[in-house]
Amino acid sequence: MTFVSPFGFDASAGIIEVFAAQRLGYFADLCLSVDIVASSPDPYALVSSGTATVTNEGSAADALVAIGDGSHVVGIATFGDTSDYALLTEEKIRSLRELEGKVVAYHTVMPVVLTEMLRKAGVDVAKLHEVDDTSYDPDLLPEGKFAALQAYQSNEPITLREQHLPFREYTPAEFGVPGTFNVEIVNTTFLRRHRAAVAAFMRADLHAFAYCSDHPATCVRFEQQAASSSGVAYDVAHSLAEWRFEDALAQHHALAGKGIGVQTEAEWRPERAALLASGLVAHVPPLAQAEDTGLVASLYRGRTLVWPGP
Image (tube, rainbow, N blue to C red; front, side):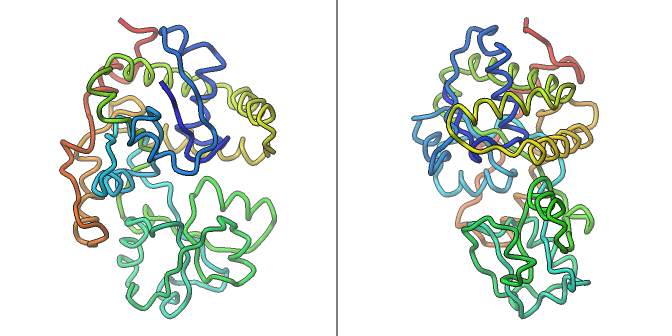
């Protein structure tokens, strides 16, 4: 199997524990050979084409958009029933309604949960000047280039706080907007032909997730060493803060009575409804086509992951 990281050597859920599972020998324990690709211009295209096997999306809505656009993938795990997305604003913005008439930046496409959040806050979204920011540089916000910027709660706010730069943060949960966090997606044909291998991959992944939850500094070090071997700079302090945030997000937002990664159609339904209402994509696939709710659930007894397996 081949795992493609969507964000390089990022210390986020769905990435860091894959490096850890490789380093700790968990994949080998289950007789899996896993290659990790940490740099790709389009990981989703690689998985869709079958060149690679598995990667992750930021949310159920992201996965639904990809599938609706023709990607040959299916969601197999969702790490939390809340969104990691946020909208960061200039410090002087004290109400989201003050963004009307101002420049609001997103990356590729504005996440539907943020649009829902803006509407819940009473914003006339048609009055926003939305632009695609390809720099992923949060410093542009306090520098005044944008009035607001799409972000991950676990990344850009940490960067700005580390630099003691002013901003305000607004999250969907504050406005009662449901969401999801870190969706693992796999090539549809591979899943159909090699379901046991995909289940083994996720068993090792989730076992490593639990290890990294207990040993955050060790897993960050694993990733740092992998980055160093590839000649990539790695910020240990930022990565540790990012992983601790996302670990807590997953721990606190797993479905009631379920293990981390277990997903249901009910969990995805609000984002599908929001996509249908938004008209962002021409086709929103049915949930039965877009996600497999049984694979990860079968790896648990209650909330306890069965390791090394039956």
